[in-house]
Image (cartoon, rainbow, N blue to C red):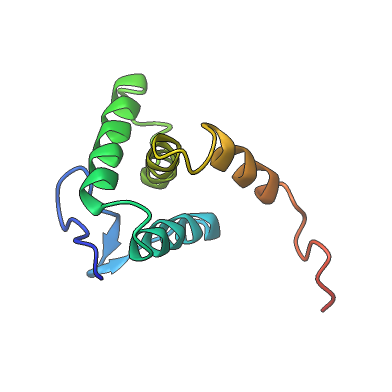
Length: 112
């Protein structure tokens, strides 16, 4: 199963030379999580894309200057909206988990 990632328009992910661009590791993880859940048929791509476009529009309204805008924050919020809407998790659960994981120190218990 493939997802029709938008190549342009508000739902299109950031790209450079045709390749997806992630500014932070969590962005690629959020992307991968959504892609894996879609592949497992947890939600339809049209449903996710509509939630993403809505979150992007909401973000643009909340911050018209774009100073705080982040495509992948919108992506993660849209994923949470879709999963919460399906009863797969409670609203805010993904965001809370991401915040917990991003505050862990480097190595966080992995012996190297």
